[in-house]
Length: 169
Image (cartoon, rainbow, N blue to C red; front, side, top):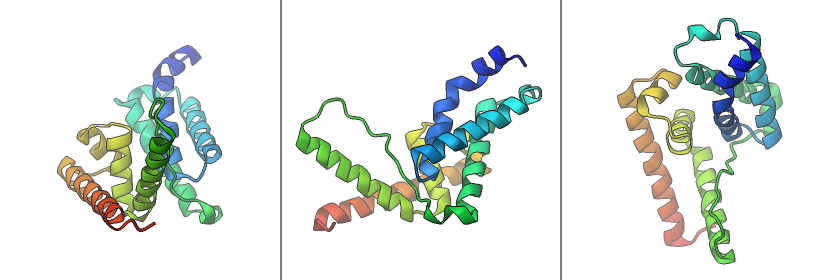
């Protein structure tokens, strides 16, 4: 595969790789390093990349596994989930503060979810993958993906409602 062909195949989903890495790792720098590492691995195996029927799914799986390995390593004791994909045009200052507060609460709630629920929620609601793609990436059945997503959303919804109901912060 030529460099041009590689770029045409891989670059359209490079940002998705980064967002997944950022969801799993502590900082933009960590996510950038992980994304770069995955792109380097893909490039070094570019001769065999054509054998995968879905290169994007393969790359997302590589990213997920790479990040989870980083989280399990000794150096990861200070890593945690973060998310900053929120953008709302030009709202008022109060709305901006409220939105940041809500996003912050969702992040905190997501940190408490089981690993599989975090991944399914990220891939479905942030990256907008369909159920079959998520099932393939996470080696689950599509029905299990739906159940996991439903449980994750229910937990997030209940904890947000609880927070808003009691104003606890």
